[in-house]
Length: 73
Image (cartoon, rainbow, N blue to C red; front, side, top):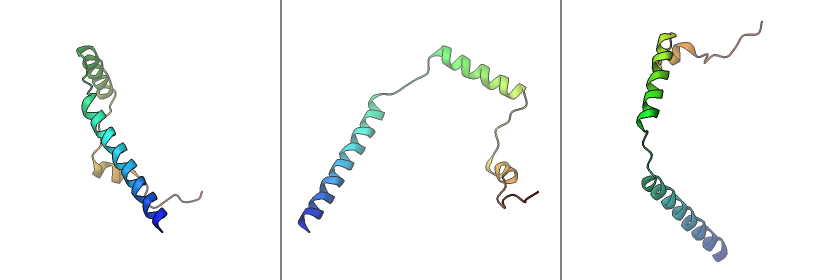
């Protein structure tokens, strides 16, 4: 019984330490796009919109998905 509790405590401690490291790493290593990357993103977005792409909202997605399955042919 004591070994199980000790194992659970060690597991929880390792999980919390790993979580803390991941959080600190995300805060310490930030990424910002440079001007060239921003221009490329804007050009790609313009090209998508010229070809008829539009981002769908949740109501559009619900209208387009099949939630009832498929009928056999």
